[in-house]
Length: 419
Image (tube, rainbow, N blue to C red; front, side, top):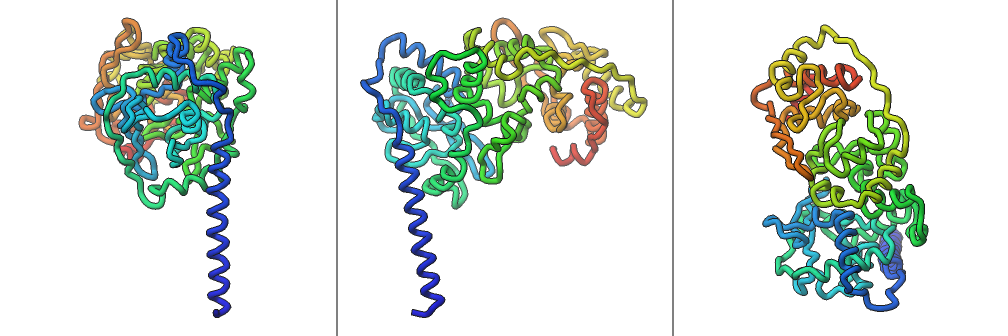
């Protein structure tokens, strides 16, 4: 055999060996878990607790069918690697999790491995759920197994090569999951803990806020050095919800608590990807848990003092557009109209460093929204067809400079790009 061929053969054997070791290690690691000492209780209290935990974890948002069948799967998640669909997690024994026992369910939720050993894509946030306690996972399992089975096939994922090969996730896990824990290990949540610790558990493990609000690297793994510092999700910006970011944009503890429970505060309303979170999850949080999340996210820090800004004559065109199109609902002075339209004077979207969300709202509008209780907000029309790029830029700059404390940095080309 020629020397070149020998070297190629050696490297090939090494590569195969490394692949085998990674796969073997990943399989062993995913099986190292506390196995249940006994069958999971199916008593009413456990099922009721599991229903609450499943809501706090917002499971239904990703596992609802096109026909609105809760937990039957089918919700698409669009990623840079392709589209991943939420799966059927009802007790159906053909398409759901009917054959899973408690240990297999725990392995799927915490380690991202299906019953047959397949790797689950981290769109199912096992990278956050791995900090869940066994007791909580068992309660969720009891609740799901108490649901009526729905015989609905799962949609195949639409992923490009090589991301369509699930075995490659063994390498992904070996690279990123060991260093993925942005927060504390699950053992630290076993004993009763402080309000802040409870809030951390609810926010980072069960509620997995970091999955949307933390930037990711080119391989789709969250950046542990920028936890909760904001990221882009399906076109919109999931904002910075770190303590510093919230305070900078004018949030206070009472405002954030009201926002979590009702979807409305003086900073605005829940829209886009956050509205389903309110609908299926945060509105159902017990007051003590919502208060714990607020204590973790912002604590008792004071709201940033708002600066009075004088009018800039260069913004006259944007001001006139606002008076013509927006002031009827948001008021000429930007104070808004209760139960009709939010205030501009305290709106958090105007304080984002990136104006992307504001521009998209101006262009596309917001659908009519029903919030918990009797609160209701009328639809906001989009101006994509009635305003040109320069007019949208001028309006956005007027709003951000006047009430957001930002510079007039939006250009017509920015609008053209987002159209």
